[in-house]
Image 1 (tube, rainbow, N blue to C red):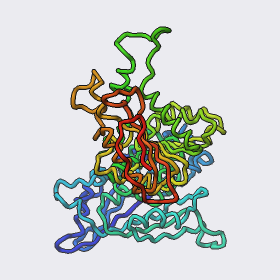
Image 2: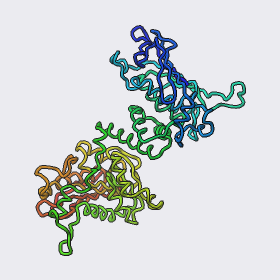
Image 3: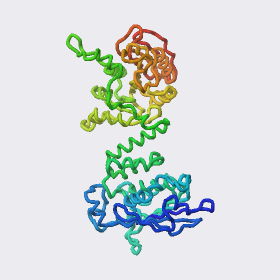
Length: 523
């Protein structure tokens, strides 16, 4: 099998610069060992105006058989039927993709030390592949699949199905396609795209697809894969339809998209799960009482604030009669689990930006062991609450439990619109810390917030004012109430707002009035 890469140039930008980009001298025929044969690189032409580099991969069929044993479903589709007579030495498949990475490793990284800046410049490229297996396997193969994969990336595609026998056209066409790709882009980008898409077209790999293939896919797909309209198809086929790996890859791509949209690193976005602690910070410490103290019949163990908060949320939801509930910022799924215990709740959708949080929630809920009927009631999806999401529309109620304080204040209006304006559930329950109560936490230094990721914590008056404004802006009524032990001076540790949609007067509503009573409302 072989691949040719051609470019054109001028006196100022000679085409022969292709040799510098590929790190292969145009005047030499070079040979490289690969895991399944020998790769030969040579230049049929290398001039100022045009230059072509060719890689010829001479596959050793015996090595292919020996190293391909036991590869299971990731092997060639023809391999089990014809170990020694098959298309692997001739068709552009994962063997060619691996050879490209082996022989042109520096070029794929965009490295050109001899000509700094050259690798960053787009070039007119023409890539020829005489025999590409485009095995659709029920997903629309042939020339159409080649176009679906390459045209969204800016390539002009010439794809022609290869006949089974030119002497007998009535026999029809084979599953192989003759491909010519033309575009102006960086050589590194072209090689990365070929590395991913050649195995996708073939629909199989010559080696077992291990978990590290996810890292290879995301590295090679950086900058283009996440926005590709055939993202699902590419991910699924590149990972040999291993659904567990496909799910991981899709979650990481979604996390990268959300991080890019927020102009943050993915690690900053995916920080919702503490791998070592699962409590309420100083709240849990205070609820547990003195160190070493045990509950007894005379002195029962205090109920943690987290439990009280969930109880208050469930009570508020029962008031609304909600059957279909969103848990926005569901974390590890504690509230989702409680909602599933209520037979009146027919559907729960947990949403979180953190893939780690969703994985932890799935484990805690034991989704893989749920009955079919119970599993139909629950879903976990990844999403950012500062962006509108059609999946969130049509629910009876939504919960934002200890979520808003994790947002920078300038981003809070985006969440308000996404939840109250776009999703617009019948009711919304919001809980957030009462910063006035922080003085009662003996373990919390003065002036500190309760969690390192909290961007703000509001007083009772500030929360009341915010709730009233949101209610007035989006056509809701709101009731604000305390959660947890009520202190006469500083109130309760948590404050809860129950919003109810007022369809008779959308976008209107008077601002609430301040009160120190146990329940404050705005209607």
